[in-house]
Image (tube, rainbow, N blue to C red):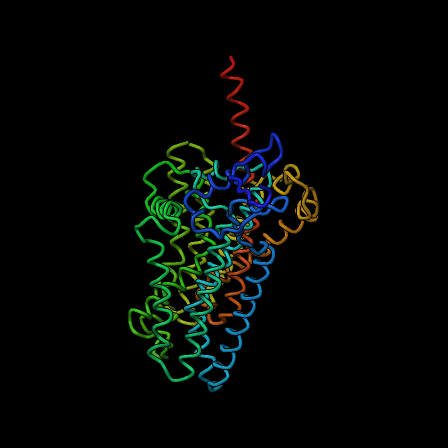
Length: 457
């Protein structure tokens, strides 16, 4: 009688307190048929063995902080390996060949490096907007699937990995005599970037890529009313004129099979520094913006849009007067065209600076762009600080003046200086974005306040 083992069912009330839920039964419901494949262990209650119940194994995941540190460690290790391989590859070359080769390699990869920098900074812009009261999605007419700052940074991370890796492979292969393989590296990279951008299938942020391409098309052909996103992106293109000019020269050399050779170094060659295509590509973003202003004047009748068009037209003489150095006599350049170039450069810089401060920005009061919804160290350091405005206005003036250096074709021989100035212009545009987007947001709110009383009446 007492020696016979008693077996209780899984849902037996003897296995749980009165009024409690049948935990084992709930587990069985949640796991479904998976219980049959689970490990079964007998449970002993008061010395009696019950029916076997499943022991559920819970996967242990590492903490997000640990994963992030591991990714940073891999990223730094990758950067060290690329730097070491690239340095040793360059040191294998002779001094004379090294300078020419670095100039060529820099031409192919510096446009994509600058674009990568711009993507990183755009992610910071979105991060600040997301923590302030600026609804950037509404300003740019973005749908609910638009990229957040985290996704922008993810794209920038991949760009940061792929572009230097391709450049390292180019340096390594060329220094070890594999010229044909080295020449294929920038070609494959440019082709991959183009395919990712225009890939017609719903992968890799298809809606965002379509939005970008559609906006670019509206910029090239302003046959419709100009939206804020249209002229905002067109303004950014003016800051990347040097990027697209170098891209044109790179593609030209790829098409004419001049990659990893010194045939292109002849200034008068089809892809040389005297090519007429250089000023033409440099001026295109300014012409796009100029015609946008004319379209805005046609739609709205505001005379300020004509003054804005005049601002962009002042960049045209800077670009073409500089290019004339290679097509006129030296005395004519020194005595006539160079003074005109200097005058047009000063006019363009000062006019653009004046427009930034008085029209694109609203500095009548301290900006609220850095006033975050939650307490933050960056908000504490930047919000309502006078030094922020002194820095932004002063740096904007200086970088507006140095930007004409980049627009000048005859000053392109010092590629490290030009690259630095182009990077600084991207940083200036990054600063400009905060105040320009906030100004537009304030205008939208003021229009709402005017419409609400009218609707009430």
